[in-house]
Image 1: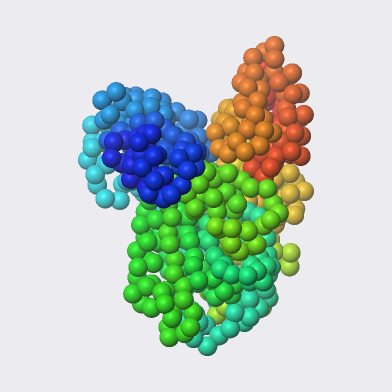
Image 2: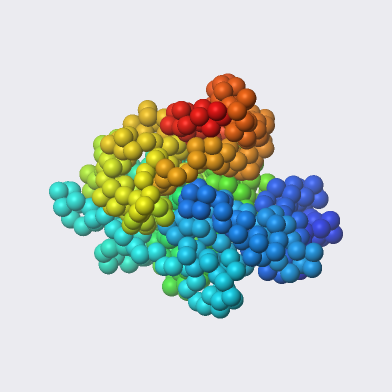
Amino acid sequence: MLDRLRQAQAEDGRVDAEDLERAAGEFGWPVAAVTGAASYYADFAEGRRGRRHVRVCEGTSCFVSTQGQHIPGLERALGVRLGECAPDGSVSLQGVRCLGYCYDSPAVLDGEQPGSGEQLGGLFGDPRAAERRTRPGWVEPLKMRTAQIPHASAVDRPVVLAGLVGDEGPWEVWPGVVASGSPDQVMAEVAASGLRGRGGAGFPVAKKWSATAQEPGPRYVVANGDEGDPGSFCDRLLMEGDPHRILEGLALAAFAVGARHGLILIRSEYPTAAERLRAAVSEARESGHLGKRVHGSDFDFDVEVVRGAGSYVAGEETALLHAVAGLRADVRARPPYPTSHGYLGQPTAVNNVETLSAVPWIVRHGGAGYARLGHPDEPGTKLVCLSQRFRRPGVYEVEYGVPLRHLVEDLGGGLREPHTLRAVQVGGPLGGFLTPDQLDLPLLSRPLAEAGVALGHGSLVAVDSALPAAAILRHAWAFGAAESCGACTPCRVGARRGVELAERIGEPAQAEAALAAHEPLLEVLTVASLCAFGRGVSCAVRSLLRIYSDELRRTGE
């Protein structure tokens, strides 16, 4: 359905009532269901789309790198306001919350051509802009960086999730497993590894798979490629640079739970990732890794790639299952859990792409070897993203338990001159902020939670001291207001109320009262939100108030 609506939009720049009725007739859906999807997703709800459509990132790293000034500069260069289309339909400008180029902020997508960093000067009036936009490789390539697994580790070679080091290729495990292995063997190795979800929830993978396998079929497996956290870009690099490893992990998951069909949802802001995964699926079919009677076995398995349409909340697993079915990406109350009532109401195991990328290594080398890495509470490794303000931004694979200071100072090299570190956002907009004197905390969920932040997807965005406290607070609340799915009142109304309070802090007579009004509002979001989104926004704002309270009070003086 999402592809059908995208096709209708491409014809005349918008999805109108006739398009909705026609799509409803083709799919046999009520018009109201199609209208709900079309009006929900940002890609369809922006009004008319110009012949040239530019998406500009409003995420945290881009905001920090320019204090938001890249957006008015882009508006002047294009001659159109954010969220609008030129009267003649020549160009339109849409704001999105992350494009996955946080290592080279700020970033845009001009059509499906990305641009970032200093090369964006071409969009701010440089006459060489047209030449830059048509030159291949407009984006500054990320220099892959690797934190080697320590030699003291009990594993004889590094675990490689992102293909940064080592020479292990994809699909080396799958043929043997599907031909002569058993689902129980795969399940046992994953259980022994202690692998937990890498998308933020940290749920034990084997427990999720086991619950799915115990339900009557048909069963499904779904890869979550909706990496929407501003500051995180490791999933994009995995999908673009190592798509076959993800597919092999998804196939092993399907074999373990007895699923015959897999789906991958990729956010629309990652067009290259979608293209490469679709190509990888075709290559895997041609090589016999997917399809009927895989490698001569009696196991059938195939994969469908679904491209999202602009929704942060679609990364939550129940919302994601609605999205891959073409519906509004609304969060659903649990239980029932997706393991018993998931895609099309059938048992479904949902894992993010980084989690699935670890599975082939675990099955090949043994779960016990993986479990010896990291920390007893959280075994294994994690891909950590460092943003543009660091001297050495990029993706690093590290063991769980390393101090954050090692990531910030040793791997990231501290901040680029002349900037000084004021705070570090950990785990994206639903994670939280820490001060420089809190960086001795380990990369572990429990200690970070006790400090008032969530590990989340594992991104670190450096915030320098030049960014005003009121600006970063408004930015945090604006994200919550823009990306709430609207399914529950505490989050839908509460985030907008937060934006109002943040605006009042800049007014001398109202700053103290606005700060005081935050606590009851945050409590409502924490205890009454339907899903982790509202609770995460509350967590992030609380951490900001803890760090910037004195400065925010001075703002109103």
